[in-house]
Length: 227
Length: 302
Image (cartoon, rainbow over all chains, first blue to last red; front, top):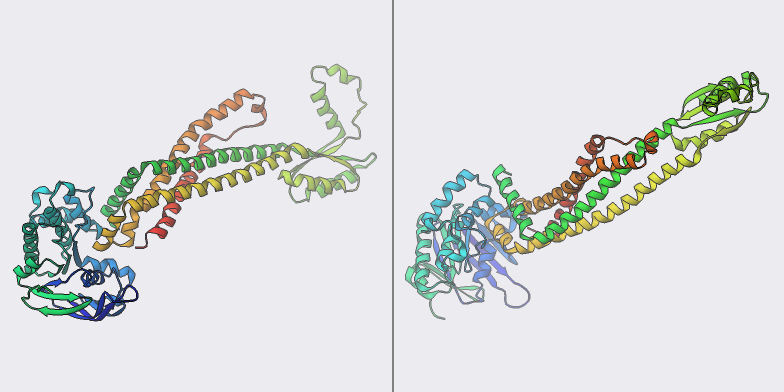
């Protein structure tokens, strides 16, 4: 599903953010990528979204080699990859419903499909009743659920989550992670970048630890060890 | 693009206008000024052309002959004039006809005074040709040529008045064109600023759209629609105003200067506006489109 071969990314001279990295993630996997800030986790997400180009090496996602992907093909590629961020990135002037529907409008789904699909996915994340609310009226956990619903509404094959619990309290963080696990059980490949040790250790998933752009450990049912 | 998508983007375009209403209003006002001026000049120029054309049709020059020239020579000159390029009509006026016309015009109401001349035609050597040319500009050239013909003494033509009309018309057109081009540039610049502000305000939203997989067209469409709508509004307002102004202006001029009503007639509003409305709308929306398109190229490298 995701393959990195000898991938490096430098922002200038000095230590590269990602340093000759090889990685293989299969379809249906749930993977934590852990590490302190500056370990290259966020760069990895950006490379996978083709927001950044690798300095060297090849990246293959969902059968497509990103290095060879033409600019005009990027939108179509991104439709197959759902993404959630630490800061939720919701549209503040639009309701919960419109935020989720937005992802469908972007890919030009007809209105009748949107009307059916958005309530479905809002039910999945447990926010069906709050569809009329605005982001400012929601708690952090609820906002992240909306972001998740938006990421899932187009049924992506892969879900990338960049510090999804970074702004949430422990209880809410746990709920969001349960939701991600549930989504994974429905067949979506999930990659979660985090430095939340409690969460990682509670879920017993594959854990890839990074430090200074290099993978230092990669364990099935792993743990996030203190460095 | 789907109809629902077009509808959605159109709505976003309207929302954009509302979000930075001050800039949008400034842009609409500038386009309105541009289209208003265009409409005003267009109405004046098109009427001027119409008047000049009417005057041209009515203006003839008169060709007189040297004393003692025989009829054969006069006929020959007539043939040569008819053969000239740009000459549309040649009418022979004999000495007798010339005298009769003169009497009709100058002894009106005092016919007895003319009787003193009886059969002694004072205009006996004033047989002439009345020559009509297709365009005023050609008159001078044709007149010079005819003056050079054998037997011709002189050619009377009214170079002054009509030439002034034509020159004034051209000058008006040129100055207006310059002003319109300047206003056009200002309008494009203002729209470009408005769209830039819109893009800045929606930067985060655009970023999210791109990550979700929006195509360039989808991201750009609301801004293009915003530009087109501003252009449309900016054009529609002055066109409506001009339409009502036009009829009032024509009525006013004819009443105030009723001496003019004999010589000039104006085009009907319908004739002017069947050209002016589409032209004005295309101009306004064109400005809107260009303004937003160049800004998007500059700021929205998606």
